[in-house]
Image 1 (cartoon, helix red, strand yellow):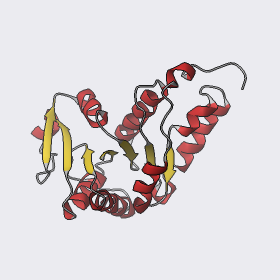
Image 2: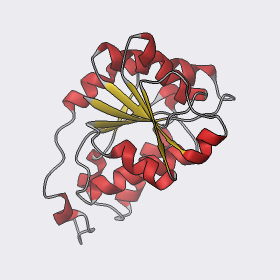
Image 3: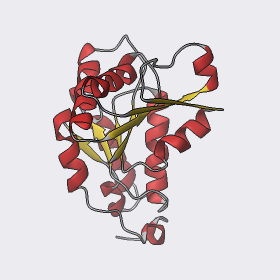
Length: 195
């Protein structure tokens, strides 16, 4: 299984975020999963990679060339792929992944997460999207997204496009328990009247 993890590079956040990221990396490697992530060496990015590497896991980083020039890349990965820009990075991260896990993060993580959710809504991505809810980080966003549905900007079915997971050790079970996204997703991508 190839798991795409969206993670932040901040070293200034609560250390519990980095601890959870490290534990997630370990968990994925222990279950034979390949980790693909943004290629960075700091913050939760570095922690999730280091966790997987500590258990002999395969870790693939996707890093824009300008970040490599700034020496932001992790030096110890199984593979580090350099790409032209952020857009190509996002495409490569998602392509071929069997699941997405979003760790707490800033605007870059949010952008990646919302792109994955949008592609799922449009029937272009069908795999699980899970949010690791360390320190209740995603609780408010989950509530906001349900407000989006309540206000009829999305359909009730769209609430099943993502899920919250409380502990890193629950991720694999959550991936396996997530129902396949409907192949006819495009048929109800547009908001329907009523219902």
